[in-house]
Amino acid sequence: MPIEARRAGAALVLAAALMTGSCAPHPKAVYQPNGTIMPLRAGYWAGPMGTNRIDFHVERVMADRVAIRISGSKLDPNARNQPGDPVTFSDRPTTCRINADNTSFDCLRYKDMHIDNGFLCGNYALYGQTYNPCFAPMDAVRTP
Image (cartoon, rainbow, N blue to C red; front, side):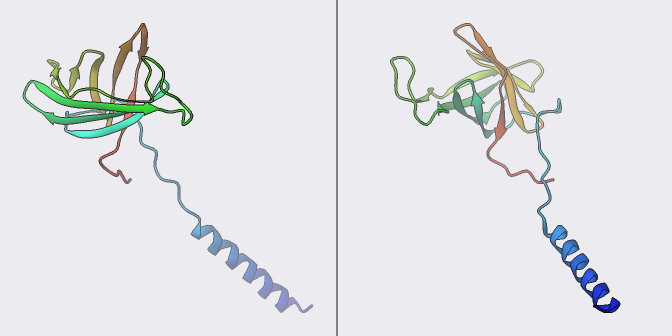
């Protein structure tokens, strides 16, 4: 095989490799809570907490209260309704008091709920268990 043919073949393979590499998808930035406290706002957040997926809606932010609506379902697709432990649930809409810092609010079981880099984070206590959920924003697409 002549040297020119080898060089042409090698150049072709190199060009194909470079083009294939340039077409590979670039990883998107992963957003997560990072301590950046943001002002309270209306919105929709969701995520896992224990064995449930929680849908947390802040319907409205007022001067001293926030109006919320919470619903959810079991994460296990094979879950069955049990007495006191339904597969899906929905709380009545309610209002919660905004704290003196004006960036967080407290409800009956949800405490210190605040927006951290777009995530709704806080503390939840029920039946002696405490969770520290950070729900992901569902109402806005974040791009780097």
